[in-house]
Length: 246
Image (cartoon, rainbow, N blue to C red; front, top):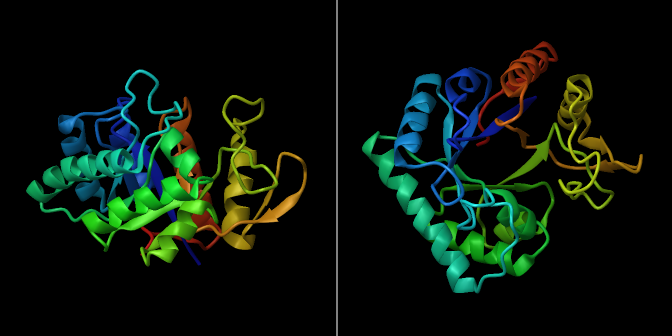
C-alpha cells in the first residue's frame, strides 16, 4: 500500500527545508500568486536533496488575493497563463537538471476547474501540449480529473487531510464555518482512512467514497511541519509506503 504526500511550496512561508523530509512531492508556486524565480530555484534544490518530486503550482494572475479570487477568463487566456507558468518553472528546473513530474493548479483555479469542465479542459490542454508526460494533480473524481482522462493525460486523485468535504465530494468552501480541520487527531484519522478505505465522513455525517492517490498537506498552517512529520510517521507505522505518485 502506497500514498503520495504533496505540499504547496515557495509561497513565501519559508518552511520548505523543515517540510521537505516528510513529503514525497512538492507543488512549487510559479510567480503568479506567490513566489519568484529565486524561491523556485532554492525549493527545487531542496527537492533534489530530499528526493522529492518537483511539480508546478500555477494560478490565476492574482498576487493581491493569493490566487484565491474566482476569475472568468476566455479559454485562450487560461491556456496562456498555464503555459507561461510552466515555461518559467521548466526553465529553472532544466538548469538544475530536474524533470518536472506534475502540475497542480492553485486556489481558485483549482476549485473552479474541479466543477467547470470547460475550464478544466483548457488547463489540461495547456499541460498536455507543454509536456504530455506530466501528471495532473486534481481534486479526487472531479471535472479536472475527468477531462484529463478524456485527453489521455495521466492523473492523480488528490484528497485533503485538513479539509472537510461536502456530500458531492467537493471541499467545504473556506468562507464557510468548519471548512478547515484544525484538530491533528481528526486530520490524521481522515488521512489514514482515505488510504486504507477510500472513504471520508462528510460535514453532513454522510460517508462517501473518494479515490486517494495523493494527500495534500498545507504548508502554511501554524502546525504545518509538526503535522507533516506526524502524518508521515503514522502512515509508515500503518505499513503504508510514502512515495511520489507514478
